[in-house]
Every structure is written in structure tokens, then in C-alpha cells.
Image 1 (tube, rainbow, N blue to C red):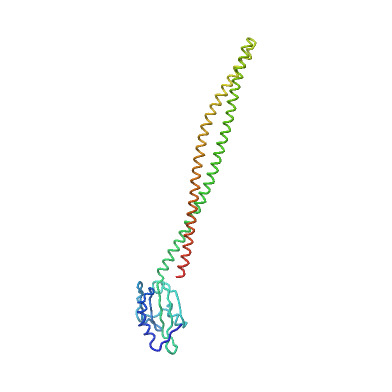
Image 2: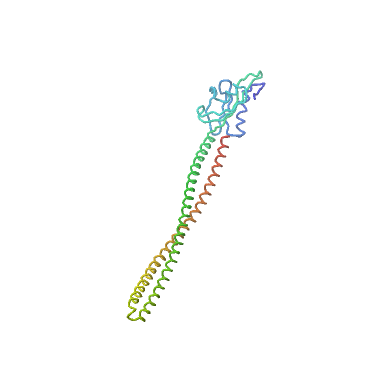
Length: 277
């Protein structure tokens, strides 16, 4: 769009520009130029490019492009031109004969937006690393929890096997007692037989020794097995307790991972908004 004015349009904009600043619509810089140079420059509240009247208009400036195309123009000016990145909009100004005699433009600094985008990018990269670390930790804990479950199962299996051996020892003790009884009976029969039962007496004596030896061995094994059962049971309970704690940690880590994913998504959305500034 171009503007026409029967009087001196350039002077009109130079008069109204300071009043536009007073509206406080945004922290804007306002410039009025002829076809070659700045006629007036109003700095923003935070940035003063110190453009003096008579300064030549850069080809990169939005006003220059607006005059060249004859219509509204919007450009992003990098910091090489004025020292800070800018977003500028401009329109050409024409006299009553439709001749372009200058232009008017407004600009605002993108320094804060650029800083916000940089910070968002840093946050985004940081959360990607955090997500990856949390994910790896979660996987390792899950793996460790699975291994702990296997150890618990192995300990329980060992405990059950010890109980079965305990049952076998009970049978051995019962056989030892029966053998002892058999030895007593043999000794009684040998005594009844008198001199002719001497051989039977020797057998009875050996049976008694075997019974005592078997019983003592069974008692010793029983003692060791009892101690083993206590140790295995304690180990099983301890591992089971650790496994439960690990599973709770897995749930916590997975919750943290889920929250980090949500924050990361919010950062992505914020980055998308920042790109539109």
C-alpha cells in the first residue's frame, strides 16, 4: 500500500512519528526517509541506532525495498547492518503525481527473541540428553530388576531343594533308628543262642556301630542343612526386598522420563511460538 498526500507527506510523517511513539504500542523505532537518506529517526526505549539525519539509506533496509517495489515490505535485518537483528516493516510515500518521494518504516529489535530462541534451543538439547540418560538408567534398572527376580527364583529353588534334602535326612535317621532296633534284636537273639550265637553277636555289634554312625552323620548333616536353610532364606528375603525396592525405582524413573517427555514437548511448542515472533 502507498500513501498520497496533497501537502508535504514527508513532513507530515516527521511530525506524527513522535506522537506514534507516545502511544506505547510497542518498543518501536520509527524512520522517515526520502529516496536516498534518513530525514528523521526516532529510537526505541531500549535501542538507539544513532542514525543521524542525512545518513544514507542501506540497501538492506525495509524502506529501500518498499520504495523499490512500490508496496508494503517486511524484512528481517541481520545484526551486520545496525549491530542488532531487527524486524522492519515499511511503506513507500508518493506525492500527488504518484511519484515515490520517500518512505516510512518501523522496526523493533529481535535481540530478545533471538536470545529466547537460543535459550530454548539449549533447553531442548539439554532435555534430549536428560531423556536419553533417564531412558538408559530406566533400561538398566529394569534389566537389574529382571536379574534380581531370577536370583530370587534361584534362591527359592535352592531353599526348596534344601527342604527336600532335609526330608531325605529324616528318612536316614529313621533307617538308623530301625537299624539300631535291629541291632538290639540281634543282640538279644545272640544272647539266647549262647556260645553258638557268637557270630550273630558280632553281626549285631557291627549293626549297632553302623546305626550309631549313620545317626551321628545324619545329625551332623541336619545341623549343616538347618544353618544352610537359614542362610538361604535370609538371602532370599534380602534379595526379594531389594527387588521390590528396585521395581519402585523403575516406576519412579519411568515417571520422571514421562515428565521429561512432557517438558520436552512443551519446549518444542515454545520454540515453534518463538519462531513466529
